[in-house]
Image (cartoon, rainbow over all chains, first blue to last red; front, side):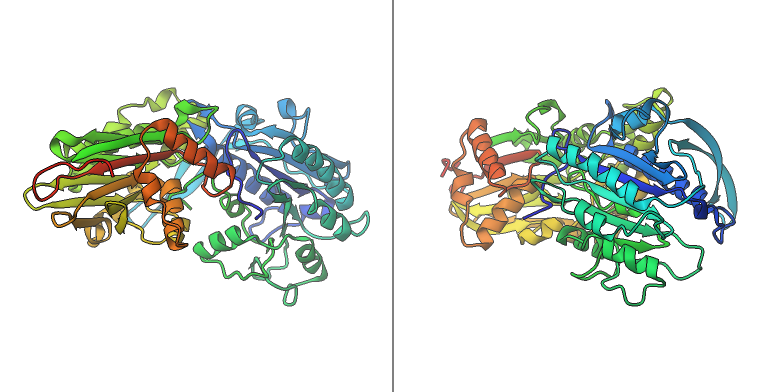
Length: 277
Length: 250
């Protein structure tokens, strides 16, 4: 039975983010911010969340290897810079140790008396927003496949890697569907790579989470990304149901204009309290 | 109450010190506590030790019980000296189960407090009588409510039905050979699943004499993917019979 390997330091799993940084990602969302800025914030927050989950008194335990592949005007490239620029996948303790900077941001919070207060919070940045050029999605998936073949070879007992692909849609270097099928065939002894596709759009259409069919999806790009997505394995269906998502045995790892952070929370490191999000 | 066996097998033999299960045996006062610290926590090992030690000293949980336990935990750390990631993990909290056993000789009963997914099983000899807080293996698939060092996440503790959901009394005075097994989740799930499948393992668990025996069982079952890889604790207790004699190990 696939996807039963425990995630631990001897057998970590991997998250590989593929992030569209093409020119169209400069379009503004309803928030007034560009898709590229929104995606960068979500990704940076996701990395901080993952690090927090892995951090104990003695430091950050390497339950996860993490990589980011950006793609846009300069082809497909390592999305990390600085100390993390030398390779794509890094143990999470290396990510913890090497943010590009720590920003002070203002967060609006309930003051407990019916009002709103602004509180200063630390916001860590590893990944910068960019938006230019075409959308070499095939090149990015090919680069991801190269990374994951090597990773799976060196981690045969691990829970298989998860690819989280964030894009606004249209590939400009060919049809990525067959490549997505191939990446989903790369595997460890515990099962094949899981591919999640997260479609960001300025269309204003309602969010869609884990649909079971492509009918009803807003456009051809969304339908293509649905077909490129892995069916949800049983344990993720169960977890999604616990979290209140309407999912079925046919649901796939596709989201339209939804929050990517919640997906990484689907991967447990041992028992997880029900009080945690 | 007599401890027939108490032992642990860590989840990762490469990191035995990272075992986050804890137990305290206070048989002189008829109390035993077991706790399973959740992996996804800043310091669940310390939290599990504090909870078990507090239970055997103060088995009656009150409003201040958990507040004082959290206060004890907080005194262990200096937030100002922590990195950003440790501060964030500390703020998120540490989580642990608590399985508390208390014998009442006068009543011939055993009280069980069960928060989270650590399991107590009452046997008569090697025959299954009852289990608490779970009775079916499938229940281990739930994400359990655990005691947390972040007090805002302990609202379930002040719920009016807390004690009805988390407390049970077993009458043992009329049992021939009452035995209580205390197990953390990987072993508990394995044991209930085997019982459901008509292959009870109670005799096998009742026969474990030493830690190498427990380790051999756990490693074998992990290798065949029959048991989840997790820190594993087993405590086996026997109780005096109606005629006042302690029982031999069945």
